[in-house]
Length: 124
Image (cartoon, rainbow, N blue to C red; front, side):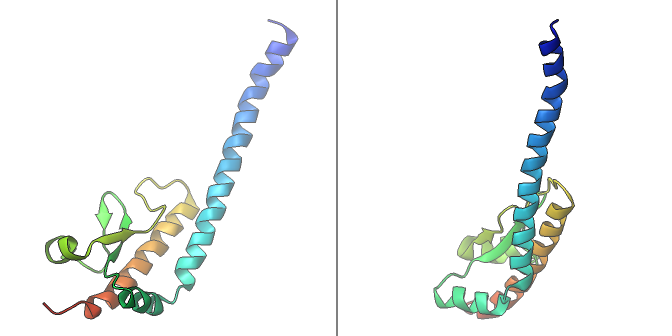
């Protein structure tokens, strides 16, 4: 094996590792931005704006399956009539600590949103 080929064998894992880390740092930054947005949201105002537009969907997060926090009877009482909007980047496949923080922030946001939405639904 030539010296260049041998050097290439050692450099390839390094190059791939750097590329992977770059992707991780971009995702981590994206998650951090999304966490900040969820934690600083005026949830009551967002519910009010959605209801005024006729958007009565609940907010959900993906876990092992679809979770609709704060609405234990979502499937039986509300799913067919109102639907759900899933928060982007939520999943049961947690990639890193920042992703776990996002999952937690999304859950808390959805729970608050849904608890404020239920009293706004038509009484039929």
